[in-house]
Image (cartoon, rainbow, N blue to C red; front, side):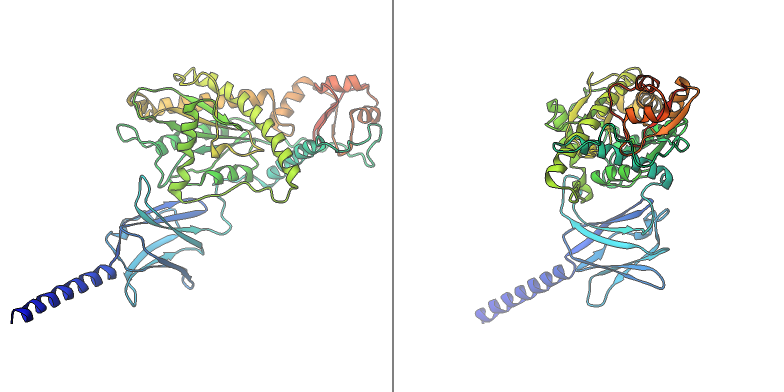
Length: 487
C-alpha cells in the first residue's frame, strides 16, 4: 500500500509539473509596454517583451492593415494609450489568434512598407520587437529643398570631384592654349541658398544623457536645433534642413545621408555632454579625426555617442562601390582633407562665439571618430552645448533664453565663415561679387576653359582678369562665374 501511495504522489507531482511547464510554454512571453515614434517618412512601433519571441508581420489591403503575430505571447499593456497622431496608424486591435499567440492589427490610413527585427537586452531596455512602417514617396525632412537647388549643388559637387580626379597621378590636364569648341556665356546667377543641415542628437527610444533632475538630452538638443534652424532660415541666403523635427530616432549614418540627399553645404550635430562626475561643465566643439581622437575624453565621448545605433538596432556603411579601388581611396583622401580643413576652420569660429555665452570645456576644436561626422563631402561639426550631468548647466540648458543664446552663437560662427568663403553659386557669393565689381560682364567657366583662353576671348589681360576675381594662380573650377572687367 505504501508503495502504491508513493507512486501516486510521484504521478501527481509529474502531472502538475507537466501542466505548469505547458502553461509556461503557452504564454512564454508578454508585451509589457508599447512605444510609438512618428517621423515624416516612417513610424517605429516598439514592443517591450518579457522574453524573446518570434513574430510574423504581413500586410492586408482594402482596407490597409498591418498584422503582427507574436508566438506564445500575451498582452499585458493597453494599446489604446499609444499616441497615434502624425502616424499612419488610425487604431490598434489585439486578440488571440487561432492556435494561440497574440495578434495585433494596425488599421492604417495609407500604404506602408513594413520591416521588423528583434533586439536583445541592452543597458536601457530588455527584449524588443521593432516594427518600422516606411511611407513610400515621403521625404524624411519636412521641407525638402527645391529640385533646382539640388541640381545646382550637384553640379558643384561634380565639379569638385572632377578637380580632385584631375589631381590624380597620370591625369591629363586640358591643353593650355586650346580653346573649347563651344563658348557659352554665363546664365543668370543662381543666387542659391547655403544649406545647413541641423541634426538634433538621439531621439525616440534613445533619450541620450539624463541630468540629475531628469532632463533628457534628446529634448534639450531638439529645442536648440529648432532655434538654430530658425536663425538660419531668418537670414537671407541661408536655408536649414532639420534631420529630425520630432521625438523619433534616426540612425547615425542616416543623418549624414539625409544631409547629402538635401545637398547640404554644412552639417552640424547638436548634443549635450555628460560625465560620471557632476563637476565638468562647458561647451565643446568636435570635428572628425581621421587618425584617432585628440584626447582621451574625445575618444570616450565618440565611443559612447556611436553606440546610439545599438539602441535603435540599425547599421549602415558608406558605399563607393562604383569607383575603382585606388581612385576611391585617393578621392576620399582629397575630399576628407578639404572638408576637414573647413570643419576645423568653422569650428574655431563657432568656439569663439560660444565663449561669449557659455564657459568652454575645451578651448580648441577637438577631433574624434564620431560616426555622425563621417561624410567625406560635407564639412561637419558636433557641438556639445554643455554638461547635462552638471546640475547648474542642466538648469541653464532648460532655459529658453540660454538655448537662444547658444543657437545664435553657433549660427554666428557659421555665418562668419560663409560670408568670407561663400560657395560660388550662392547668394552670398553674388552679393560679394557685386559689391566688389558693380559693372562688367559675367562668364561661367566651361569644361576645358583656361584663364588665358578666357582673357583672349574677351579681350582683357590675364592679370586684370585675375585681379577682378581675386584669383591667385591658375586654378579655376567648372561652373565658377567670372566677372569680366571692362577694357
